Image (cartoon, rainbow over all chains, first blue to last red; front, side, top):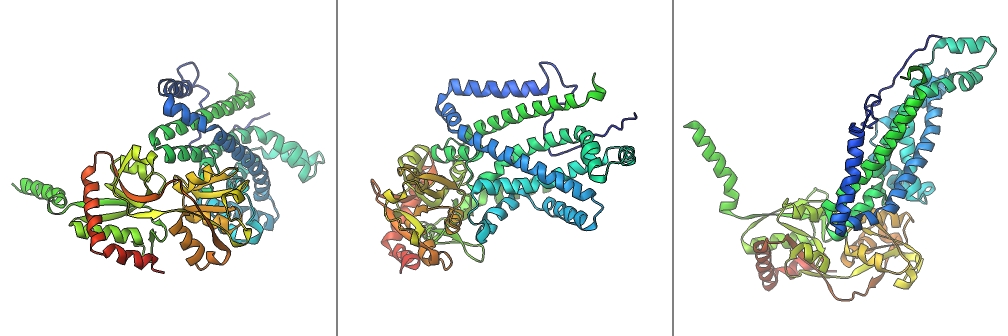
Length: 264
Length: 245
């Protein structure tokens, strides 16, 4: 079976280690061990304020995780629907999905967050929306559009012969999509989705403007009260770095497992 | 020769402000009506800018007021981005450890803004409620101190007020003058919001101008000017302009 190898480049700065980048002295290990070592060193050598900052952050880390995971799940669903919509032969569905992608991609996430929380807050229906839900909604709507493009590209990457074969075997269009095409497309789709996951985690720091107490806001609250700005933001940066590094390692592991056609 | 002349000119241009008249760069977070705010012409106006200009005039120096976000205003001072903060900074013991203050120029209490029909009239009524305030303000610190209160920090007090107006908060705590402006003067908010009560302070809370440690001459300059402005009665004129009724 001829296998068409497709890679999707997502250039939003998510740091997925390259497969060639192995060994103890790879960039990933250097950053990870470096970050952990700096945190340990700072906390041990100057427990006040560094240890105090670190103790202040955990509930913020939880909130960041909550926002990230809920948004990623929701955006996967929105992304799948959008991706299928973009490929739909139905003119109206196609137009709606495409317009959604165009509009959302054209508005900065920060503005979307402000809009959903504060602008729509004046509308009766949304005024009781808790900040966390508003944050998740905005992130999911924004990333759903990006995910839609990932899904579309992944589905389009599957050889047309697959559709033709399935159709001639008597599958209808929906069965072909869900039983033949999508299971194969997953392999191409998952790595960029992992990439988006990391990008979303980093962008989740934007929700702190909605007074959601994530890592960044906790750090700012600590700094504004104690005036340890350097110390607080150093810790916030290191905590984000460690979480992102762990995630990116997970994504790269997943990428390796999925690439069973070109294992070395 | 030409090069030398150009260099000399450049040197003169760089040095001249400090030679002829001292210009103090003053940071102010213009989101705190009526103390300091942006007017419709994008100028920084309010009680505090007026006072600072009057002090500068009396003291014979120049000021340039820079609009600076509150969150990080103290970090900017420590980093030397400006000489002075004139932004309704309450003089507290914690802040005194990080910066130096001028003589007080205003007394504030912490006012609690509520939805008029909520019936919150005391600190005990706030038990179990969500209270918003601007990050790093004495209002936020006092919200955290009240028993049973979930304190939420906002970048700007205006955003907290908006959330209170939309029913996502039970109360907002900020300086009384600001609270009165939002709850009583603002045409939109005053319909729904009201001033619940004042938090009784352990000791009186005063606003002062803040400078970075070691920058004593700036503080002396301000103190001298403030004294002159108070003696000449100009302080009362400015006070009446903003709080007359």
